[in-house]
Length: 217
Image (cartoon, rainbow, N blue to C red; front, side, top):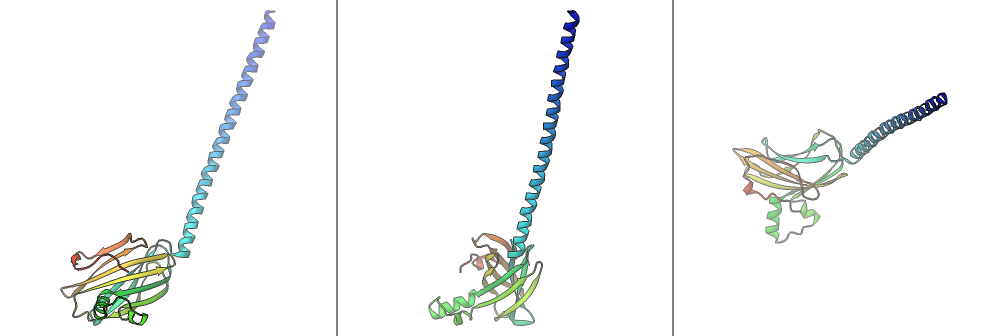
């Protein structure tokens, strides 16, 4: 009887141990599976981020992304009646189908005053506006694009407004020039389509109160 009880106890212990081992092994397998699944999820997340980055890269290369163009107007000392127009690229991606309209606000104001109207034909607009196109503007490039003619030797300030349209959207730019000690200083502000400032570079020696710094189409 005593021997049977011992055998029964041993069987019970053995059975309990085997059940315990099964549970441990089951837990270990579940944990291993969870670790493997977490690894897979992390890999998928990384791949998803890579796909998103690649998509953004393709969009940038196709449309121009967040790149933009700065117009520089540079009066030439050796040609006192001419100012060189330069296009300077900012950003990582090339710009495509760039179209610009540069308006000389000083000549425009004189024409409005003389004619008593701010409505002009296309031919009349050519007196104070310059339009041109650039098919592609590459990153880190600066290219010459025409010139303005004015009496730069006898004036001491100029104001230009610029409307630019490219494949990645529109922008507005102000250029204000001021002559000090026979040297032209430049100030510029570039706005996005919602008139938020995206770039500003104004020489500290330019008297800001001499100019209007908001964009008016």
